[in-house]
Amino acid sequence: MVTNTTTSLSFESLLFVILLTICTCTYIHAYRASLLDSNKRGLRGLLWKSARIGERLSPYVSLCCIAMAFRLLFFSSG
Image (cartoon, rainbow, N blue to C red; front, side):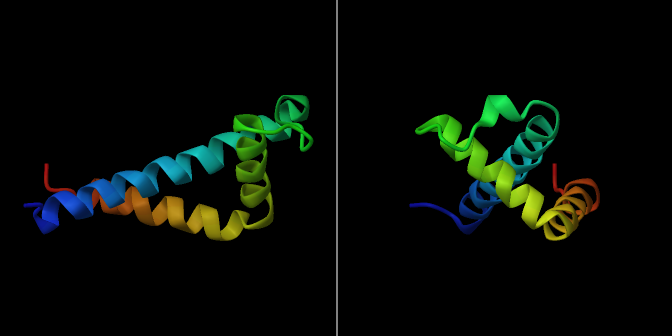
């Protein structure tokens, strides 16, 4: 039996990982675009797509990062 708290914490962790991946890939792509070439397949292709999301939706990604930071700092129970 899975409790609601455990499920929400794992979903929150998943959102943290996704946001950090997008931010990190966008930063890497800005300074070393050759590492995340768009013609790559597999993991590098996925990382390139994350960088592209970060570039195109940067205001929304930054707002989500700020919201997650406030959630972590002020509403965390641990």
